[in-house]
Length: 193
Image (cartoon, rainbow, N blue to C red):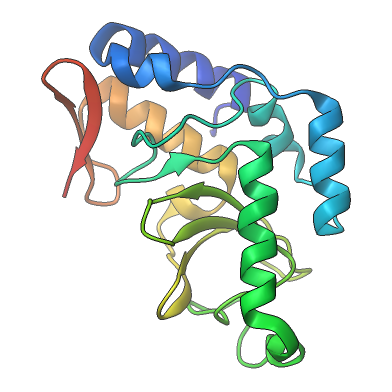
């Protein structure tokens, strides 16, 4: 059973505070609910409740790896910026974004119903797929060069599943989807693969 967002965050915070204090200190303060409402209006759709709950706990974290293998959480303003930038780049081609299998392993380069929530510092994002399909809510990797891909590993099924899998990997020291958590200099979280 997948832990709630609150339970997963508690587990992650306890581990980070004990093993990687620099990464723990990078976690942002809670977002203002009003900022989330502004962001939802800017991108024209509501955020999924698990993302809202997470942002109300930690509004991003700067460029520190948290999610395997090298993803950092975006704050509310960065979610807006990332979404708007991708929409500008993709432009008029959005009409063809539904081609192919929307529940499949690969998606278009970008879609307006994707909500970015994490970044790698190289122009790529983790997104929550909000399209109205069977696998709605799954996590995708929106690569700036090759487009979006979706993994069938259970940790990528939803945002709660991703946080729960991250917490479990941290607590057990075992790899998840091939990624092993490590404390660099007993100060900062990194993931080996």
